[in-house]
Image 1 (cartoon, rainbow, N blue to C red):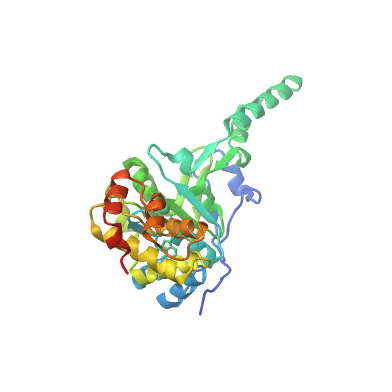
Image 2 (image 1 turned 135 degrees about the vertical axis):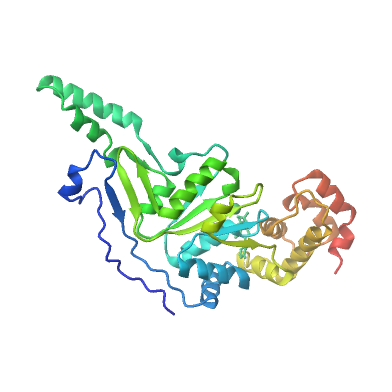
Length: 334
Ligand SMILES: Nc1ncnc2c1ncn2[C@@H]1O[C@H](COP(=O)(O)OP(=O)(O)O)[C@@H](O)[C@H]1O
Ligand SMILES: [Mg+2]
């Protein structure tokens, strides 16, 4: 096993220990701030990744542990696509746990832009600073405009957003969640960051991570992502788990649920999915919710009446619930 934590020799320059050569270039956009990554992730095999993920409570299949191993070993972003509730977000969380790294999450949505993903300037504090300088300068002798402008774009006014934080952290997992919700332009911007592992802040400089962060992108495939972004990443489509693994997931996440109940719930959900005519087939999240709800009601097995009364934990469309209720005896049949 070789999850070596190597001390990176990269010279990294924080805004607090900036050499004077760089300090003199403070106002120019070509200042370069390199942040070292102090961990080298070097799992020895896909099997080792699988074992370690399992130890966190996440149960991957062989394909997923192999691609995760490769993403870590080759230091490439991992793009996970699949139906909602198939464990995409949870994989990033499990990775952060096994790497003992903070998880930095960027939840994408329509209209998201660089100021929410990357950085922003703390405008109210900049104004306060400006007023304070003005007040003092009236009592003394005038303002050095250039110095004042530079002081407005100091580190303390820079608001880190997830991507910048991930580049500056020395050890982090960056989760870019549900990228398919963002617009095309945001995807292009992201591609640039992922390709270069650096960002340019015009008033401040270039911030660069010397070694790439562990990046996981997820998509529910509500739209196709661009080939260029896909090319940058290693790709994996997460399928719904098979019956045995779904039972195992329920038992792992909800040890208080009996084996019998876990099996009945997972089997029923698998049949609902297989029917192919639901508007929103349930994911693992719904299987867990259903099992949790039944346990809450003190049940240790699933009968027709209770199943019918608790369908709202697993199906979220009236049409789906009606359809399943009509065939509930077949769905629950041993
Ligand atoms: N392979 C798995 N092992 C353990 N838990 C899983 C697995 N797949 C899904 N889950 C659980 O199912 C739920 C939904 O997963 P989530 O990651 O939110 O799905 P997605 O991001 O794909 O919509 C979470 O509670 C997660 O922990
Ligand atoms: Mg998710």
